[in-house]
Amino acid sequence: MGETRKIALTVNGKRYAEEVEVRMHLGDFLRQQLGLTGTHLGCEHGVCGACTVLVDGVSARSCLMLAVQADGRELLTVEGIAPNEEELHPLQEAFRDNHGLQCGFCTPGMLTTLIEFLGDNPDPTEREVREAISGNLCRCTGYQGIVAAALDAAQRLKALKQA
Amino acid sequence: MKPPPFSYHLPGSVEEAVGLLGSLENAKLLAGGQSLMPMLNMRFVLPDHVIDLNGIGALSGISAVEGGLRIGGMTRQRDIEFSDPVKTACPLLSEAILQVGHRQTRNRGTVGGSLSHLDPSAEIPAVCAAVDAEIAVTGPNGTRTIPFAEFPAGYMMPAMEPDELLVSVFLPSWKPGHGYGFEEFARRHGDFAIVSAAALIEAEGGRIKRASVTVSGVGPAPVRLRETERALAGQAGSEELFRSACESARGIEALEDVHAPASYRQHLAAVLSRRALVKAWSRIG
Image (cartoon, rainbow over all chains, first blue to last red; front, side):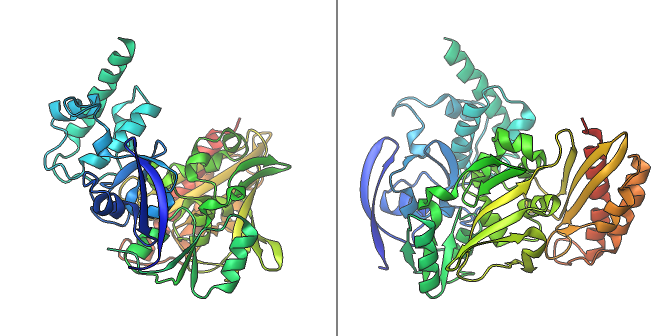
């Protein structure tokens, strides 16, 4: 093992104190060291978007950050999106109901990207949704189901807010 | 794909970073990581030391100063996208920044990182060429300013010494009410541009008083179309004028690669600079 550093961070509300190899990127750290394999690694050079996580509420590609750079940060990964083990987040429900996923490889990155996006833009147009997910590659759905799911989720989240 | 082994340094000040940069052999500066991290993952670069600039708060920030804007090297592209002072003082940058990668990469990517990396098709260097920006770099002998026209020393090579660090960029403002336009052609949204064009126009009495036209992705660094700018001075703007003034862009020496032959880039340079000028002219307030 090469040079290491101690870091402390919060992932999905849980505190971790870990010793990490300084050259390890955040995606590998989440998957290999914390066992959070929901975050997927596709290209590992910042093109596919599958490894997107939220760092202090803003999206980042976890393959383009070192694990040591997450020291003191609060992360959200796909495992932390659902409110509990029984229920899904409205965005996840919308993905299920609109055929927003087939193989599921891009889904963690799509969900984290859209959580940030729908927070910034609660009532988006189709074009805005397509632009928001332009940094996330999907090879199954042709994007149609994902765009429909995002628009549906916006309505569900709005209804929940008004309720 | 895993980054190669290196020693990691997290300086808390510019002085400390410059000290490390001057004393460590084969060191790389890590800004937003949106170019260096892929290069590490793919082992295109094999540094012995990585100096992470993310611990230096003083390098971030956007401030309106006399005559323009000063933007710290570690300012995130995202912060520029949502900045009101940028919209007021340099609306061309607000428009161009939306073409820089994607939301996820703008959240991390920095102004100084993009300028130091100096990709020939990058948008931030193109804006800097358009407004005659000044780049401030700090080294062991203090800080010096490099006019952007002298900043690119070659293909992806800024005119900085190996022990210098980009600390900020100054963007001179154009008069309120000036016209601006940024046009880009890429195969997919968020991809590297094949060619992009930036135009600025100041008008007086219905005539062009001052114009700046820049294309990037054509040569190894952004190119100002001086001949076009001269042809526009003193004229009343029209589609026909912009078309004829941009024809000379077809003569620029252009790069050729797997994405596009030189002749295609020259064609795009003429078309996109015309479109950028048309847009800029229509926005004069």
